[in-house]
Length: 217
Image (cartoon, rainbow, N blue to C red; front, side, top):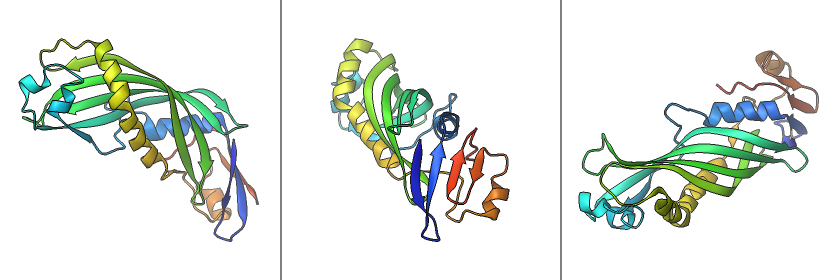
């Protein structure tokens, strides 16, 4: 896929990004299979509202207590890569953790979620990827409340899709709209030819071609 961005000299430069480069960018930015990566602020809900999601919340905790709901990204994988329309289909694994209002060192519930969707991609003038996500499927793969409940995973799935997943997606859209920065500045030339040696990036007078794995550290 390709995109155009303006350089410091006010000239335009075309960027061409291949599938392997984009996959390595996703790996560097999103994937953390052990702990998950947190990109957004917690969503806050009172216990009496969470009772609609998981039966038993208001039995264990005060109805006015506030629960922090934090989304951790474990991994994002590319399903298909369409350079013609700058569109990438993906699947992702998430953990959604619910805080314990009595003791912050513990959680009150843990939910594992798998999602499938697509993202459109463009570049801004700071050489950053701007992503816009559309979700096609959301599946709650496990529900672990750390208290007694009669709520099943299937019951939770319905409420989660209706009342919580859209809030999580809106948060991610806000973060991704700011852009994922590439390891480049806006002054292409010999400095970057040396700095980017062996990174899978080629600099030509009016082109930057991303071919291989991209190290964003």
